Image (tube, rainbow over all chains, first blue to last red):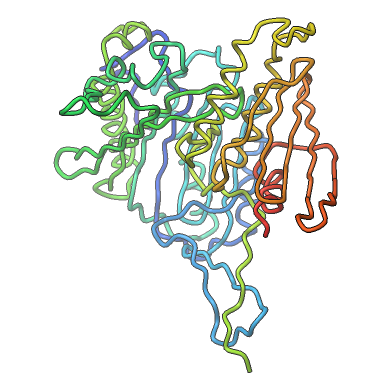
Length: 279
Length: 152
């Protein structure tokens, strides 16, 4: 039975949050027996909801990509690129509105939601969670029906990508202390001028060794419209107590709580007002 | 038999590492020149009509977008800061000079991009020219130009 989060009160809520993308995902040990045809067979079952696909290189899982030269390799021959996790393929399946995406490779399953036009309302975790849960259930059913071993989960992930457009609450990195209270922006002796750009990466532990929350702030250019932004990415990652769906969803709920509360704590009240904070 | 190691060629495929993120962005701190280049392109937005005294309109938003996307496609390469200037008619010009090689992109107000490659012969003063239309601004589209520019 699907678990529900609809009754959970929102701990953080904004009328106009800067979130442009959410990621809910699980990583698991490479599925023995999973091969190229399974991508197509799985797509066949979800094609009504996710009619479009793309093929991409796989996401590294720690093993990353290796460049390996065989002992027999002679001068002038090219090196072979080997992928640590097996199949060098990740398939994207997305809906016709291009707001919802499922990413599948032989050792991970990821669900993305993103803003496309920029004017649509953020779907909130209450709306995104059931989409992940339903898609994950279909994937589980598929691997069971194909007699592939049940995924052995080693990591859950909740990521929120936020875009802070230049001109809305900040005009240059001298303004960063008004966006991020923990960034004071001053040296101890007054020698350094205001920075031209700042990149911050911070890691916070989750309680009971449940994982960690990573916050990355980086200046960037959004490719769609060429706008200069601060991209603020919050990612909660950790291992659930077991590979059962209840434990996965419970971990994602915890990860989500840390992402949204961490976001509110990391950013300033001035920015909260711009985003029209409700809770 | 020679024991020399095989030469590894740079991949033609996208240079960004695979990521779970769907919304595409280019980090501004990829390389030292990129941040300054984006700032220089942004500054062109402040030019008003008749900025050149010859009736040129202000720089078109499409030209600014394409110029930003163009330098984004080169952002992870170690290059000198290009000269970035407004182009008559509301476009943007981007120009690198590296040794005997010059690479120039002209971005037109409608977003079309023309390139000009100039290879000078230092000994004789002769020049070889090649020009054409740039079909896209992704890293795979612009990498051949980067490779040409930094070739000895």
